[in-house]
Length: 125
Image (cartoon, rainbow, N blue to C red; front, side):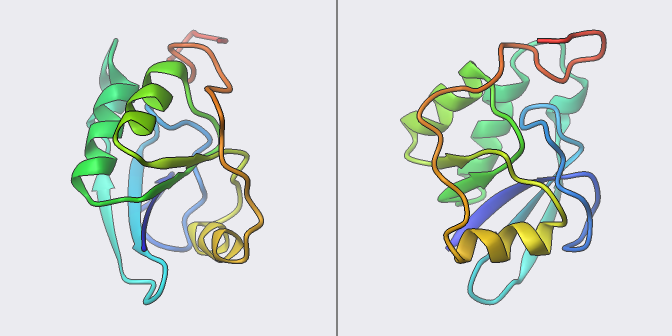
């Protein structure tokens, strides 16, 4: 199964980024083999639509789940519409996040847990 993890770096030892739409990178990981692809997130620089664009990228990469710290309403709605499950409260390294996911330590998100524009410079939502 492929999962998309928000990341502050380019490998499995990087820290999980707590933001979905405005994370620096995505690490798309095969949970069985731990093979991964690091993808730069263009949404980090957008003034609007970052969550939707990030959700589109996760779907394009074949992810069945997203592991992140937080997820806003537009991103959640888009991920939900394409059948990608969202898991929040994720922290540690990408490797730890994937292992915790495989061991069932995270619960799926039923709705967004932060407001729109969360993680945008100067925004406290």
